[in-house]
Image 1 (cartoon, helix red, strand yellow):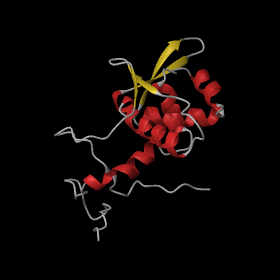
Image 2: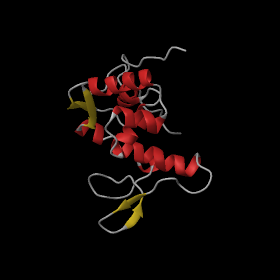
Image 3: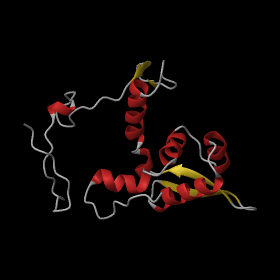
Length: 159
């Protein structure tokens, strides 16, 4: 089955999916956030076919989400390390994990996050970047941004 391309859509979500929307990609990024850097470790942990893993890693390197650093010369082998761009995906993965804990997992969460500063298990909560107030979807308005054009999806007016 051929995947749709979003390259002509002026939408940040669609453009993000062009980079991280392929099958396996977010699990590779999850493991990189957990500290995995070696091809064989990704392959073993995920049970992913080597050719698919190679393709996904190449795409992430091409888009600046990972950098490839040699750690061995003969044969050449690489570590795959997250860049700032890749590390910024932690909030996306945290949100997906929290959604999965609530809606996709039967029972207790398989992984939790602890804030070492206070020692408590914590969740990522959306807050206003200006005033610090916790927000929900109903607290927000979606407006045209400075990069909007005729290809930009706009919100449907509320009734």
